[in-house]
Length: 182
Length: 391
Image (cartoon, rainbow over all chains, first blue to last red):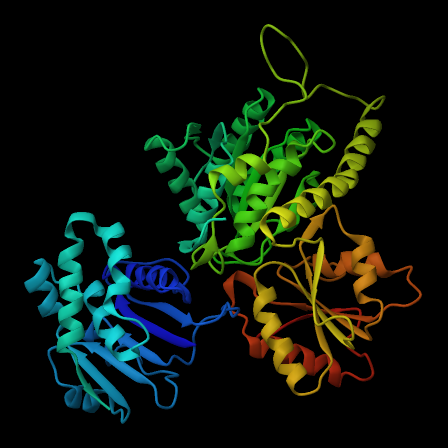
C-alpha cells in the first residue's frame, strides 16, 4: 500500500486532487481512498489531504501518520509546517517549487529522496492560472510509478469538461519535467 | 451489478437513494451530511430524479415535512447530523407512533458542546428510545446497501416504521472509496413501489397521530414496542434477499475470527475494519483475539449477541458516546443487560473512545486488547474507561 500526504493551503485544491487520484486509481482496477484532513477549512490556511492506493481492499480508516510520500503543493509551507513529519524511512518528498531538489534538501535538512517541479509555473503556462493541484498529480504519478497518466484522463474529463485537456497537458509536463534526487 | 467506481460516500448514498425513486426529500444541510442534501438537490434540479426536494428552514421542519409527506403516501427521505438530529428529536417518536416508513441517513457527528463537527455516536444515542429501526454502516458499500434496504424494511406491511442508517461522519462520509452501485433495474427489481397502509387525502379522511389519554396510551406504546421487535423478522428476510441478489451478506451481529477467541472486542460503525487489522496483528502473535460488529442497534439482537460471545473469556465493548454519570457507554449497558441472566458469559470491559473525531488506529485497538489481557484480576471489569484520555 502506498500512503501519500498532501500539504497545501485551503483553496489550492488538495482535496480535489486526492479525489481525482482515488477515482482514477479505482477506475484502473486498484483500491484507493482519498480524504481531506477532517474538519473545517479556511482559505489560505495550511491543510492536508490523503491518498491510499493498494492492489487489495483497504481496511484501515485511521489517519495517515507515516506516509510513503509527502507532496507539498505550496512551498511557502516549508518551515511553517513540519512536512516531513512521520515520513517513512526511505520515504520521498515532492515539492512544487522552482528550486532544485538539492536546495529543498538543504531547506528541509533532509537526506532522503527529494523531487521538485515548478508546478505553479507549468499551471500558469498551460492553464493560465497559478493553481497546481492537478499539475502535481503528474509529478506524483512519475514518482510512485504504479499507474500512467492515461489513468487520469477519464476522471479529469468528467470533472473539468472543456478545460480538461489543459489540465492533462499540465500534468504531462510535470510528469516529464520533475527533477528527482534519490 | 454495476462496476466498482470511486465515489465520495455521501454522493454514493444520494445516488443510491435516487435509485430508490423517492417521491420526496426534505433535507436541511449540516456538516458532515451536507453533500447528501446537495447531491440530491442537484439530481432533482437536473431532472435526473423525479422527486419533490423541499428546502426546509430547519431540521425540525425537515422531519415535520417528511412526516406529512409520508402520511400522504409519498416515499420520503431525509438526512441529518448531530445538532440537526437533536432538533428533530421531538418528532422522531411521532414518526414511529404514526407508523410512517420514513428513511433517514445520519452522518454521525458529536453533539455540542463544545462545538465539534467530527465523528462520534453522541447524536444517535439520545434517539435510542424513539421507536426507530437503527442500523450502522461500516464502509461506503454498506452505506449504499443499507440505504436501499432501509426503504424495503420500513415500507414492509409488517413493519411500517421509520429507519435510520448511521454513517460515521468524515471517516465514512468524506471518503472517496471503491463502491459498487447497483443498477436501476436491480433496485427496481429489489424494491417494489411504496404501497402505504393509509394516506392523508381530503376525499378519504383518516386520522393520523390522534390524541390518546391514559385509556389508550399504554396499549399504543405496547403496540409500538411489538412493532419494533417484530421488524427483525422482516429485516432478516430483506438481508437474505439482498445477499441472494447482490452476494453481500448482512447480519444483525457480524464476527471476525470470533469462533475460538478468548478475548473479543465489539465495535459499531466504521471502526470495524480498522479493528479487524488489529485482530490480524494479534493473531499473528498467537493471541486468540476476535471481533464482534454490531450492525443492528434497534431492534437489539439479544439472541445473536449471546450466541457469539458465550465462549469468550473477556469481552471489550467499545463506545463512541458517554452516558454521563451512568453505568458505562450506551452499547456497554445494553450488552451487559443482555448477558445479565446468562450463566456462561465473558467478563465485560468498556472503553469509550473516538469522541469528537479523535482518531483511532490499529495500534489503539491492539493496546486495548493488551491492557485487558494483562488485567488478570479483572480489576477494570464492569466499569468504563476513557481510552487515551489526557488527565
